[in-house]
Length: 72
Image (cartoon, rainbow, N blue to C red; front, side, top):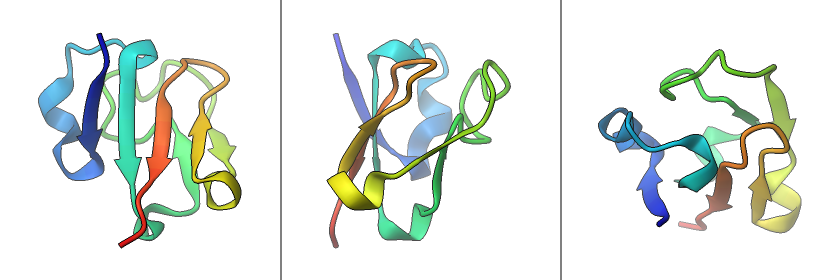
């Protein structure tokens, strides 16, 4: 089961494991890195910057969180 959320309501999904998480971000969130400070386990792995601007979607190589760039 996947859960989709935006960066503005991430604190509401603290019980969702990162590997099952889909987070929609905007260009305002760039440069994008995982984990983000308001994630449940924000210090669970080293910070990695994700080049989402090139592809529109990126998956964190550490925790599996999928980030999708929404064009506004």
